[in-house]
Amino acid sequence: MKTILSFSIMCLLAGITMLTGQTHHEPLWPDGVPGSKDVPGYEAIVDSSDNWVKMMRVAHPVMDYYPAPGDGRRHAAVVVCPGGAYGLLAIGHEGVEIARWLNGLGVTVFVLKYRLPNDAIMSDKSIGPLQDVQRAIRLVRQHAIEWNIDAAHVGVMGFSAGGHLAASASTRYDEVVYEATEGVSARPDFSLLIYPVISMDAAITHAGSRENLLGANPTEQQVRLFSNEVQVNATTPPAFLVHSMNDGAVSVQNSVRYAMALQQHDVACELHLYETGGHGYGLGRSTNTESTWPMACEKWMKAHGIF
Image 1 (cartoon, rainbow, N blue to C red):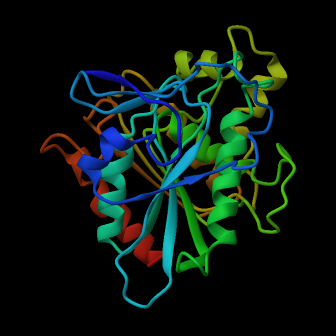
Image 2 (image 1 turned 90 degrees about the horizontal axis):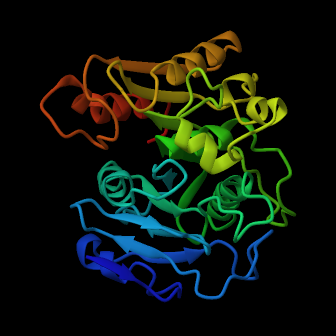
């Protein structure tokens, strides 16, 4: 059943809260969304008709705050970017379920409901999601004391197109896409990229994600700027990547190219390639080996002192 919700911060995800328990919805831009166009009636839609929860028509981004269990310590934090080809957000298995898993490891989570590129509501749709993820990371650091977060261990995580956004946050964190006043860095301390779209190169990109973000005919300059494998440098944060060899939606070459670029710049990286799994499996949906990636990720985070 599809439910159209009037957009207010406290009730945006009311239909999902019953499934997820208590959480807090933190607006990213309480004083106005940068580069936005006012379109009356443009409202968020939450749809669970096919047994997976997704959100569309996001114009007013929020992040859902899932605090780690209270134990008196400051915790690492992860901003999670669900996938959906920049046309929807898979907020169930690539959002809420991820928050529950990371909470179990003692990590505070912010599931980011970022704006979905649309010329109708944005003056430049290509930078809207990047504005949102930069703002989210800065807000987490700005409120680190209040939210009991270790400001030196704030990471970003993304799935599919959300992986492109997370990689963009990792390679373009110092690019000025809005007038930042928070006084803290937008650089993630680490990134977790799960079957990510990395490149806008037509040879390996996900065509739907590219068109939704850049339009049908992007310039060569746009393609290069939004291809994260060519934006890597020595200051790009360490990354953990997961991909399946039989991914029919997003070529495994996206993860391979990003890992190779990190290696070339002496940036720590771990890439797990699985024989099966396809695409969009979240924490895993079978007994095959791709379902073991959360355990590998946990070990990687521990090895890097994240928790």
